[in-house]
Length: 381
Ligand SMILES: *Cc1c(COP(=O)(O)O)cnc(C)c1O
Image 1 (cartoon, rainbow, N blue to C red):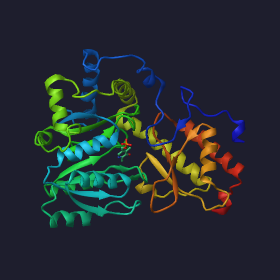
Image 2: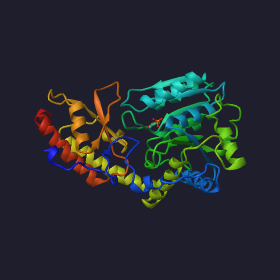
Image 3: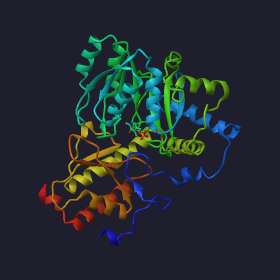
Image 4: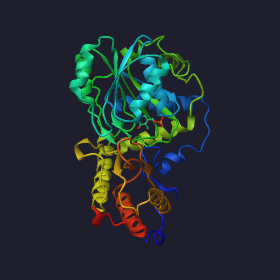
């Protein structure tokens, strides 16, 4: 019985977040924050510089790329990237197969940029032949926007193939790699793009509050005057760092210091390879275990990124999602509601300071909760 179990907890006694970020962070990362720093003082300026210098290494771009951090959540970085890189008379082909592609379209609409859309269902990757034809037919398209892992479903989009296509047409690629950055390989020596956006609270396992754009220096240099806001102007933000090493406006200091600690843990785990391997193992245990319990994944294994997994809502009348959610929360696990339009679903994240044993304990709890609810998925399946 789930009630008889001691609830699962993180190192700091909190429920485990099986969510796509904000996620469970280590105790050391939270402890890094229990101090004060002056935002224009050398101690913080040095820590921030270390973070900015390290991030391009994650994409093997330490020579050609520069980090431009942006205060706020990940969307602030995506909006900064789109509105800084796309000129006012530019036009973006937005590849949409989930909420984050939709959000990029909305950002561009508000900013008054030209838009073309290639949209596929949430469980389908873009049709590259179609993208090829759209680029060939419309010379006004200056940029393409793609999402690496669409967190809406957990689908892995083929950024390498998209990048090759965009380059062949001589257009520019902007990537939202928010939920993939640090866990799925994105090697800038092999994949050509102008900028990639991510944030502090996903696979690097920091706390929320900082977005960042890793920008090709030569492309960033061409963006002066593009921005349509003061705050989200990456060219101006970068110029500020070049002049003073400081943020133009108050930075989330504690978030950045914690992010610095998170990056040390990231490198200690073996960077993208090490972290990606742990998440892949988490995802494998989760998917196999849930399938054994009778749940079905939205995506086939070939399209599934090891970041977040979407499960179909069981048809069994005894399965009431809110009860399932509450019982899991009681047992120390926070899962994630679905966001799909194609199917009634819920999601379980594989990222954060979680390992194989956490996933196995979670599965045992799911099994207990199903029994308590009187759900017989295995026989129903
Ligand atoms: C998390 C995420 C974002 C940013 O979301 P915020 O809530 O603004 O942090 C953007 N794109 C993708 C693909 C994401 O997973």
